Picture (cartoon, rainbow, N blue to C red):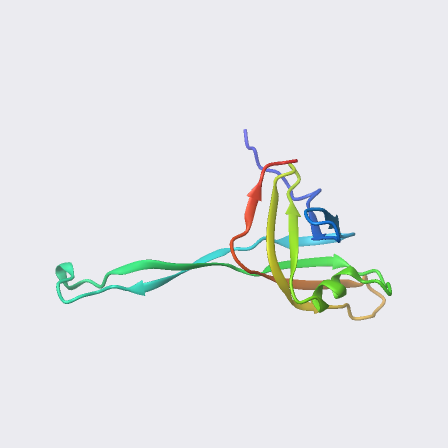
Length: 137
């Protein structure tokens, strides 16, 4: 029997005025969690065994988070305000309550094209430093 689940119930929050309190954003449609990459450095030397190059692990990086949401026209657009801010703190909550918190900044904020269809917007956030996984609250 599988333990697989859907992402239904996931949330994206932006830290509010009170440190440590996150305001969940409305009508999030899709959240692409950060992937992780690591640089490598060549460490080959003149005595490397069997003339094979040697490598060592170097700096790690959390890749950008991507969010898609139903755009609701408002003079107090929280996502646009987050884009305008230099940096911020963000939280992604999984359906089981496990949280991923990270600092970073918005790379992109793309409001919708106004058509007869649903208005969807997207944002991309660059984590800065190591994201932290936390148990369900």
